[in-house]
Length: 158
Image (cartoon, rainbow, N blue to C red; front, side, top):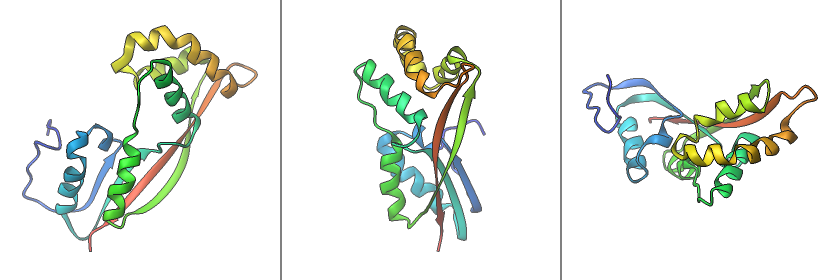
């Protein structure tokens, strides 16, 4: 299926639904309803696993926060809102960390460019600042390691 979740209409129910880093892209005004749509498609005893990047933890988040300050834009992580929605479903929260490792700051900028595609010209303009920011996350050989803090929300339908 090549459709957005808003457009999908299935007459099925499932034991497991995975939403891996996609809830961020749900329209903010529809996020809670669309998660409810997933819940409604679960069989009793079924589970939803929703994965997201933590709003405050990890150097991956810190460099994002720094970038948005540089371009003078307010950025709100969907993870903050997601935590509130998950409480309504009695979701269990599990957290884990991974690392994004690049051989040098330029390679890390290539990786980060994906997240900042909406602000491409700003990203190019402020890349020297981001490189400077990365120095504290670089080793003696110049490799850059950024830590990503992930949240795994597990909802079980009663």
